[in-house]
Amino acid sequence: MMMSFAWDSLKNRRKSVLLTLFSLLISVSVLMSVEHIRAQAKDSFNRTVSDVDLIVGAPSGQLNLLLYSIFRMGSPTNNISWKSFETLDALEQVEWAIPISLGDSHRGYRVLGTSQAYFDHFKYGNQQPLSFSSGEPFAGTFEAVIGADVAKQLNYQVGTEIVIAHGIGAVSFKNHDYAPFVVSGVLAPTGTPVDKTVHVSLAGIEAIHLPQAALKQLSEANAEQTIDLTPTSISAVLLGLESKMMVFTLQRSINNYQQDRLMGIMPGVALAELWQLMSMVENILIVISALVLASSLIGLSVMLLSSMRERRREIAILRVIGASPFTVFSLIMTEAMLVVMISLISALGLLTAGFWLAGDWLSATYGLFIDANLFTTNNLIIAAIVLACAALTTLVPAIDAYRTALQSNLSSDN
Image (cartoon, rainbow, N blue to C red; front, side):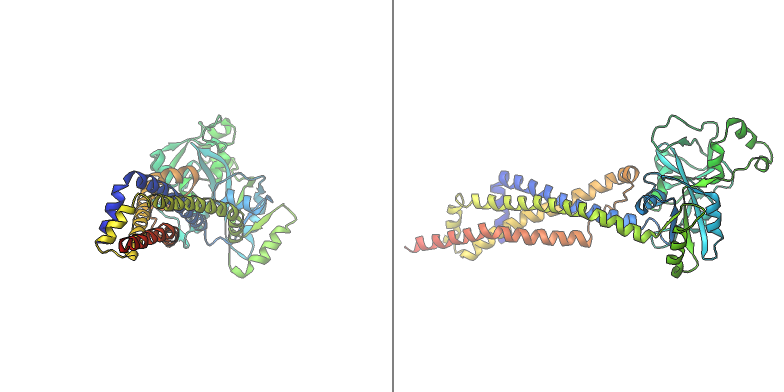
C-alpha cells in the first residue's frame, strides 16, 4: 500500500523527479565506475606476473624497470650486456632466467625478444603458465608467437606473415620489410600485457637489424654457422630462484655487481610502491565522486522540501482518511528510497553494459582488463552507503512532512 502511494506521488511530480533521478544516476555511476576501475586495475596489475623473484635491468628506478619489463610501458634507459645475463643464468641460486629485449613494434603492439625459457617459466595470475590456443613456440629465426589480442584485433593466425617496425609507435617510418616473420603460434588469453605482445627470438631481433646483404645469407643453408646472432645486450632479465630465502642476498649482490651497472628489484615491492604513488590520485577521485553524490542527495532533499507546500492538501486528505503523522513520514522516506533504488539499479545496468561494450577498447588502448560484472563486494558496500546517506538527507523533508501532518491534525481538531 505504502509503495503504491509513493509511486503514484512520484508520477504526479514526474518532471522534477526525473531531473533528480538523472542527477543521482550520474553521481552514482561516477562513484561506482571510479571504484570499480580502481579495484580492477589494481587486480589486473597484480595478476600480470607471478613466480618471478627478481627483475634485473639497468639502473633507472624500480618503477620504470617494472613498467617496461612487465607491463610494456615506456622504454629502458639503457641495456645490460649479454655477458651479464650469462653470468646471472649461471649462478647456483638461479633456477631459471628469461632474457627480454624491447625496442620494436608491430602496428602499435610491442615486440618482445626472448628465448624458449619465456614459454617454459613465465607465469601470471595464480602461477598459471602460458598456453597456446593454436600453433607452437617459435623455432626458427623468423618465427613469431603472438598474444590473443594481437590475433583477435589484427585477424592473424598461424602462418600469417608480419613485418616488424623499429620503435614503439603505432606508425613507424622504418619497417623491416625485407625480413618478415611468420606466426608460429597464438597464445591463449591471459588478461595481461602478454595478450598484446608479439614474441620473437633474440636471434630474430638481431637478424632484422643486420644489413640486407647479411640477411640474404640467412636464407642459405647453414647460414647460422657463419653469422653470429648472439645479442650483445638485452633490456632486462626475469629470474626465478631455487629458494625464496635467497632473494635479498642475491639482490644485494646484483646491485653491487662490478662488471656491469645492474639493478635488481622484487616485483611485489615495486607494485606496492606503484600503488602508494597512485593512492593520492585514487583518494582525490573518490572524494570528487563523493562530493558529486552529496550534491545530488541534497538536490533530492531540496526537491522533497520544495514540494511540501504543494502537498499540504494531499497530506490533509491523508489525515482525513486516517493516516497517522508517522505514515506521512514513512511516505516521504519511501519516495526518496524509491528514487535512489531506481538510480542505483540503473547505474549498475548502465555501467555493466558500458564496460562490456568498451572492454576490448580499454584492453587494447590502455591495457586495462575490466570485468563487466559490477556486483562486487565494493560496489554493494557503496550501494549500502548511498542508501544510508539518502535516508539521512531525506530526514529533513520527512520530519517537515511529519510536522505538517501534526499541524493538519491540530487544525481539524480546532
